[in-house]
Length: 220
Image 1: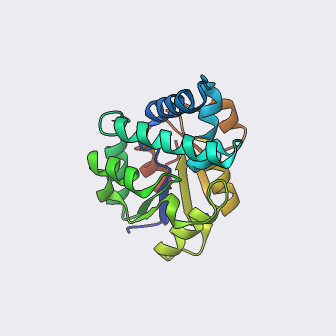
Image 2: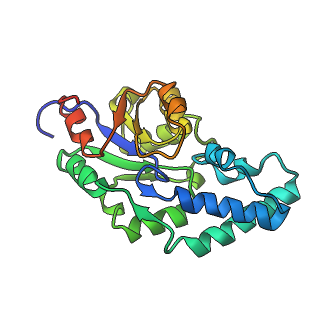
């Protein structure tokens, strides 16, 4: 790396941050609730659970119902996944600019490894990342700090203030805060903006290319 760079690693949430998966996820939830319980679930309630492990969205139900909802969601999601995701504009350009600065990059997500990697490879994103943390990798998940600690350890980073976590939900920002890392929120989020702003992320990104300016100290 040439000169001083503000962070040693930039880590990213995946759903709603790097890939536009949220409409597909909402549809998967809606179909699962309709199939198993015959109800139309409120979209705002569904959005509030995105970023957490899937089973958390069903934890209010008994164990049998929880399992049936989980299985129904997986069936719908598997059907939609190949064609239901699109790229957000500027993602490749932003990731490439960070890579050219020599800064570690990684994905830290509550999503299962198989579908997350499928989409990353579908859009040729995986080549930019030095570390991946999926739902299977930690016992505790966002907003607990464990996934970020796990990623930092794999990268050999001990000072969490040298890590920036980029996300689209309150769970991402709380995870960064709990880990002692800095947080950046993306303005292409589907989540309520007021809730994100209330957590005072250090940066508010309008385009992923802004990360290279942040790294080199050319604040926006």
